[in-house]
Amino acid sequence: MGFLTTSGISHLDWALHVAGLRHQAVAHNLSNLSTPGYKRLAVTFDGALSSAARNLLPVATTHPGHVRPGSGSAPSLPQTWLQPVTSTSARPDGNNVDLEHELATLSENTLHHQALLRQLNQRLAALRLAVTEGRK
Image (cartoon, rainbow, N blue to C red):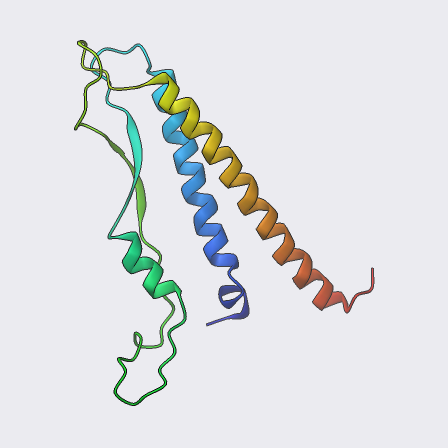
């Protein structure tokens, strides 16, 4: 596992990718707000997030009887994609896009994306400081 992987940059990259997908889904949903029969898109994950989180967190074994984590290889991040939500239909025309829900999702995702960018910038600044030994 390389330094960039262990410093969390690859995980931030994945989280930014998911936030971008979520923005894309909301944009499609808002543009099809009045399209009859349109089903809203949502970001889905391959596998449960809890199992992915278990793979991302370091596991300490303090006793020989403890279960050893993985095979030592880099943890895999869950696959994400956009998928139509067909379980609900809010209107008689079959469209299930709710304007208030989409705008709230957009606001929440924008704040999440900005926080991820701040974290990435901080990590890159720390790497830059280490490489230049504090000199400009």
